[in-house]
Image (cartoon, rainbow, N blue to C red):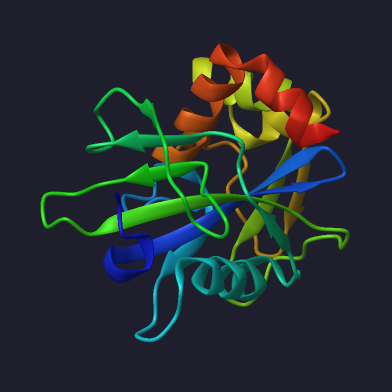
Length: 191
């Protein structure tokens, strides 16, 4: 059995707002693409994984969230590994557990919010992604400008170069994979 709270390094959430998934957007460290990044971050000393996810979402998108137990939990040995369904027994089961060589875990939960997200001081902008937006961003190169022109929703706080390509980070790639492989799961989440 995986001890989640004991070994957590980072935690975040796939937040659904009005049937759209909320992700951060901002320049990558090289500055040549725009990362599409999950809401979440590093755990503080006494926090549980759920508390970390709630705090980081509040810090990054200025919203309170309700985290709920995922009907399925997936495990990856690392980001490049194939995901596999595992059985976990926690008060709130995560959707995803990613291990690392030092045996610390990154956890992703499912959550929803009734409140409109707003980029906070530490966030350049937010994307509100539909299922088709996720498939598009994860399957071909598209600039932020083209994403917006085709009807994509972006809440931008700072001036961002909209001509840069959106680069999906691993949590978004996993979500795209999951949406493709388990459409029934999607219906449970969005209803």
